[in-house]
Image 1 (cartoon, helix red, strand yellow):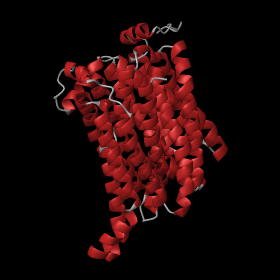
Image 2 (cartoon, one colour):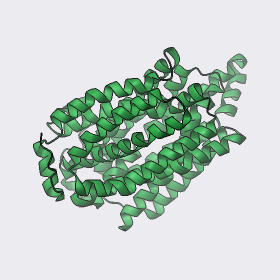
Image 3 (cartoon, rainbow, N blue to C red):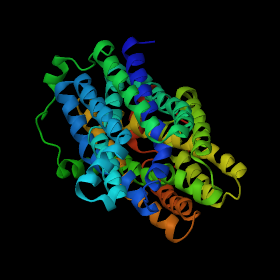
Image 4 (cartoon, rainbow, N blue to C red):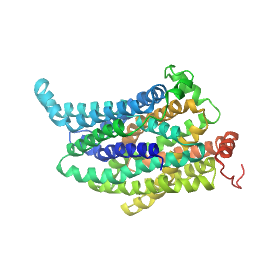
Length: 424
């Protein structure tokens, strides 16, 4: 395997392993200090809100200064965020003693929010890693390379949630400290092992590399005929899928009374499927079918899967419906990024992936808040039902504007993927 490809995939795996250690535990951690479902939703959303700002900046900066230094800065922020997460209780109680002894829980929750804000602001490293993959792969192998990034993500979710659930038996701060240790290891790996993928010559060829990241630039990207449609699809798919991801732990607690450990094991099952899809199945699928066809089918499957999540009557049926959810989600996450990098010029890849990550982050602001309100005010079934409605409408949009688009045909020709017999 290409050494640089292996190196960045391993770095992503370590990063996501640390992230997934604490992800399913946040609702339990916050509720320990009196947080409501709405506050839990806001806590998760705070990370995404900062990533909305940070991701396009990191993507553009990586085009200008290279991928490696931006990855170092990003992982450094993650390390600091996890340290604060682990120390939230002693820091919060110390502040309460100094200012307001009756508000200890409030101060602890404030430190939890601060930790997620710092991590979110510097946490756009996945889009930088994807840009790195695009630098070291050609058009034919890019889907597979980005699929391996997704597999590293999924592998992190196999080990992380279960490990975090087990470590939580000794307190919710323990998984946070374990995640900070992993982030520190990642800093060392990037510094000593990961070579730069974007040479000075390539950076010099990039136009407008000093241009600021603005809302106007994002709006122009959204108006493009094909890449804009992919970004719009990313938003609505991301909204539905983010509700599933961010609300799953709270949903499992409310509907089935699952413990943090049990929730971690269920998410581990999702991780196993993700690794299989993105590390193995995606390569086979893109050899046999066009990317626009796979995107269209996956959106439809995801709509039905989220409806199944909403209506699952037992843990057994919940696990059954998680299978198509994980498969279609893995395919979409990989192909939306892969197709997007092929639809723009090479010098735009870092910036466009940053915008894509920013759009996805915007859904993670709305999704936890909306999901928390639906879960608390209406019932455990409503987040899944809402997602199913959104993706049903998205299916129609994708069919009309992405499936069989002329640019999709150009991408297919460059990738030497045989066309299917399906016509539009």
